[in-house]
Amino acid sequence: MSGAVTAPAMDVVLSASGVIRRFGYRTVLAGVSLSLRRGEVLLLVGPNGAGKTTLLRVLAGLLRPATGHVERHGAIGMVAHDAMLYPALSGRANLRFFARLHGIADLGRVDAVLEQVGLSRRADDRVGTFSRGMLQRVAIARALVHEPELLLFDEPLSGLDAAASRTLVELLASFRERGTAMIIVSHEMERLGRVATHIVRLAAGRLGPVESLTGRDPGAVFAELMRGDL
Image (cartoon, rainbow, N blue to C red):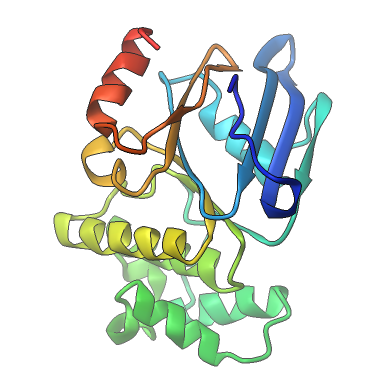
């Protein structure tokens, strides 16, 4: 299983083959291949500058690979470092705007995701007044509003306090149980290790073998990956 989670074709929500991405003369992704199916949660780890964020952006369609191709089967939601919200608008107004972009007419969906991330009471406050953790939760709600088959997270626990982190981890676990596929960039093994089904290390733009976490200690597998023992 080199650099890919194998999957029956009918369950595949994302597949990438031979993806190369360059910035000028610098090769950031050097032939990445990956396949993910429903219900699989891949924890993507690696050193700073390894290309993790770039890979997520390519998989989401925000960047185009120089060579190789990416196939997406279903809607994608992404939570990046930048919340990408309008600070002068309320949380509810932000989500209604993004819901309309996705063609969602039932705006009750907005209230549902605000409830999921614990922001119902602050829904009508301007997001420019929100803390970093609250901004992150609105960004997560935005990624959920169109009920995507695949979620991409770049350090989703960043800026969240312990209570909010627990809520998010429980939410991610519920998505996995419903069959949502996820790729999560994070080193938060203590919190996210129990959500992930697989883990893979990206270094110098190349993916190592994908390791299953079934029946294994996520922390130990992570430590071995980062040492290069796997």
